Each structure stands twice: as structure tokens, then as C-alpha cells.
Length: 265
Image (tube, rainbow, N blue to C red; front, side):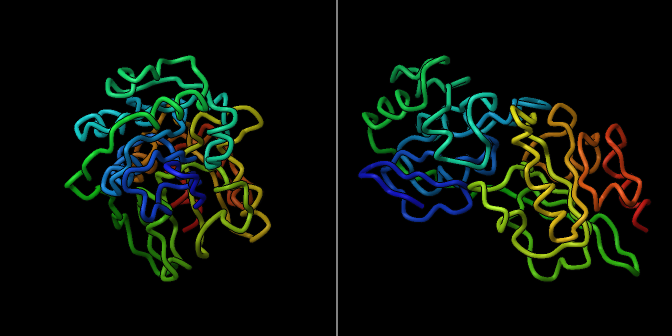
């Protein structure tokens, strides 16, 4: 995490440390879980990626949560900045949505993230949001070959998941553009949300990186599943892309994400 006076630039909201009174610029989507992390950390303002909005506008649902904590926040268009990369959010982002608090500081859709950041730096320090962010990990099934789980964030994975099939609410973009961060620990297979894809398929860049590790991986279209909701990835998601390792099991674009369980059984 990089700090510049009252500015904290962090690729993932799950990496937040002491940001009380600072404006947070993140590469995370603007859904409920990342927004909750920012609020609990006591940030005075925040910028996220809108992940194309997607199903139920989940990609910027966190703006309303931050409004309840009087924290001004905006999301930048996934077409303007690379999801998972806070430097891109700041340098290239164009605001697509803002909560009323941010609007009151001049953060209107269409302005640059750099200008929005300057406006937010003039905001008053907000109180920490009192309620910890909610994120879930749900067991979907147990088999002789391994368990299957729905997790709202890739941050919930652990070394016990080496034989698990994971349906994840996180975006499929590389965090900070680093292949080494495609997944925090080995898994049997994993499905992400494509965050709308974006130019150069930015929301799917984890897939080739996981091919290098031999891990089958896929994304679901953001329009079909709520980003930040692993259960929605499993129950609602329709596959938008697969890597080579996953394609070998027969999973293809257009298939329901849950088909992966049967194909790998």
C-alpha cells in the first residue's frame, strides 16, 4: 500500500491497513464487501472500479453503504481503468457513479479520477463505520475428490482449499497486474466474475496466469452474476471465458458456471 499524505493507493481493499482520515484509491470493485472494508477502516473518501455494474448494479452497490457513513465515494468506469490496479484507477479512471456525499464535493460523473481525488481530499474526516463488512464462505458440496465452496472474496481462500473447487465473487483481473497474485493459494479449480471484461479483457487476466500454474479457471459474465457474491457466481453465473486447463474438462463460454462441478466429478 502506497501513502501520499492523506492519500492511500492500494490495489485491493483487502490490503487496507491504517487509513483513518485518508482518501483511499483502490483497484477493487465498488461492491458491498470492499466498501465495507473501506468504511470500517475510517477512510474519509474512496475511489473504486465500477466492474461494469453488472447484475443488480453490484459493482457499485457499496456507494450507498458509504453514504450511510457520510463517506464520499465514487467508482470509475471499467472501460477507463484496469480493475485490480489502483495506479490505473488514479491515472486513467473516469468517474461513472458517485454517491450524494461525493456529488456535494463536485465529483460528478465524467470527471477524471485525479480531479475527483482532489475534491475528496478537501472532504472532512469521517467517523469509522461501526459495522464490520459482511463476506461469506458457503459450502456447496462434499465429494471424495474435494469440497466445493462459494466465497465472496478471494481473500477468504486458505491452504486447506488445495482440493476445492471455488466459485468466487472476486473479479478475474490480476491484482496489481502481478501474475504471482492470481490466487493466494493453490485450488483445484476456480471461477471469478469478469467485471464486464473491459478493453484487452482486463477482467479476465487471472486466467492465463493460472494456466501457468495448471489451475483450471474461468470467469462468469458480470451481467449474469453479482460481483462480490460467490453464491451468485455459482447459481446465476454464465461462463464468459475459460483458460486452457479448464477447457480440457469441457467447460465452455455460454455454459452455467455450476456445470463445472459435474464436469470435474
